[in-house]
Image 1 (cartoon, protein in one colour):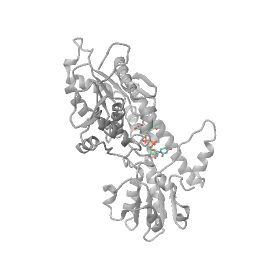
Image 2 (cartoon, rainbow, N blue to C red):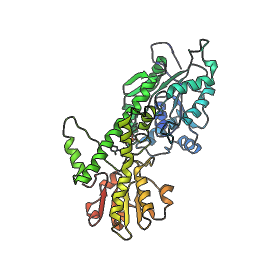
Image 3 (cartoon, rainbow, N blue to C red):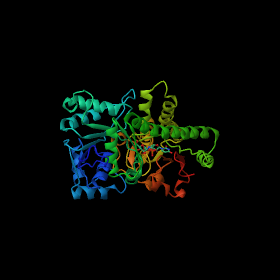
Image 4 (cartoon, helix red, strand yellow):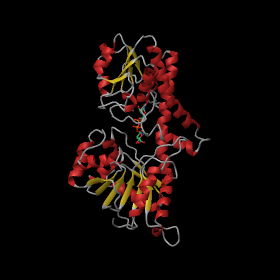
Length: 422
Ligand code: SAJ
């Protein structure tokens, strides 16, 4: 690392990214593509092996060529051991516990290993989405493990900390990683400056520097904003069902107002971000976060509503064949985390053992165990599933499903949770 006190941007010779998932790995590859030596760290040996062969362990459009390029050039390598580096980026999972508070065990495990390698002067950035105060806690944790890095006054220390929450949309990571503006929160002002310099190596967006707690809250706020707005659309869809109004047409019309922009209803909210992050705000301020909690509950209740609709229709058949289209958490990805569609399919299958459930999911080779373990569930291609079905349930608006010929749906009972076949 050079020039720690000059106004010139600091450059980093080595960066270690800890946690090589959907966010950590693309971040590592982007930094490596700018000629910085990046060492990725992951506890999963299979991930490490795949990455070192230049293979992406998950599906993300257009990412494979970039990864293969930086690996073959020698700018990015992966390993299970944490090395020394000028800067660390921690991008590990931050799941919630039963009471919806964050579980920081993966941050602690990463911090412990980083602490052991520090020499002084390094930057440690937390990217994982976290409640306000988590980055400060990480700093305290690391400095407590390394009292030799804190000055005699007990306050000044030679390691710098910041929070730089990721904002990329899965499916658009290659575009958004480079173009999105970023909020960067320093635990100290120097930490914020150094993190800004690190992200400036690969980001073309504005780098907006604030304190760590505000940056943490900004990330939670962004995802809660989206959650509340999806809840509004989901609630509208249930009201419209009751009133016999087409919710999709309604939203399209309302959105012609210059200051109205309603999101789309669906089978529920999935993924590991929007369905999780608002709970961190609720856990931090349970009395105050009323709307945010209610929105979460509205979205969490939507899958049950869809199941109820399907069961009502299916009860009219003796042994219904039900084609369920899509189990990913959203369109055109293979990610099944917190997927409402997957839970809907599972619940229908369990509630109706006499029904035959045909699952169509072109983005996965095999059904997950939660479905494959059920005897009345099979994985099928779209044409066969629709052909044999009495009831067709549209759950995920994957591009190939949008091309389905409407002729195929004639004579079928159709339940379309995404408004694809209006
Ligand atoms: N959904 C709807 N209706 C909509 C939009 C989305 O029902 O109108 C559903 C989707 O089907 C999906 C869920 O919401 O089940 C979440 O999908 P998403 O596309 O809204 O978001 P994610 O989870 O893929 O990514 C979000 C993004 N956050 C925001 O847009 C504010 C992304 O920028 C973040 O980086 C990401 O969370 C994250 O990692 O936090």
